[in-house]
Image 1 (cartoon, rainbow, N blue to C red):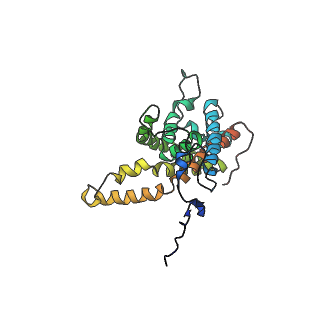
Image 2 (cartoon, rainbow, N blue to C red):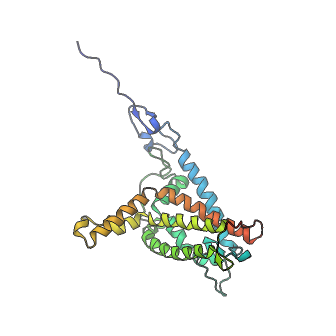
Image 3 (cartoon, rainbow, N blue to C red):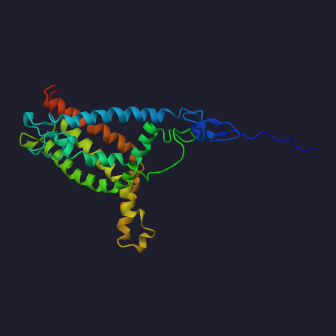
Length: 272
């Protein structure tokens, strides 16, 4: 007697959801936002869109203000990270932040993680794995303006220089009235600069620079140190998404705190 054939078992999808048999993953060939997926795939791009829109709007507003970016009351010396290094020319009629923010903006805009985030959140290209897209065909990043994404490694070099000025701001933030001391703003600037450093040094381009282009570390010049450096950058790179979001939140928070102190809306609490 012939053994009865059994229907194929449904394939497990994200979070254990079942994809109907027949054409698993066929949602990618459908129109946006149709998909075979049964999980809440839209939560991630929606939350990313809200976060990027809110923080991006605040950063843009703060950059164009051109005032209340420093607090020097009660012996403090706090400078908003949006305005560091402070470059202020008499002939420049607009906010001094606009003279320097194109570098960190370019670094974040061309960042591999941020590309994924805003491509999905704002362009739905793609909105998610196995989800229908708004446009047909794949052109990659070969046409303007997306071809400018290839400048990411150069923005990374410039952004690393900015860290020197930001750490100098942290040192000044721990000097109150000419002596070592700390207020809430001191630790907020420290936390922000630490997260910006972790975000910068977890960059995919930096990981490739120190070891990603080496096939044999033992055969390369300074192979041992390069392997160790590459390993440390790889550990940081595993959490690149987290550093990206945390540093974006703290850079806005630090500016907001300095701004509120400068406007005398809040008072910086001295801790020691």
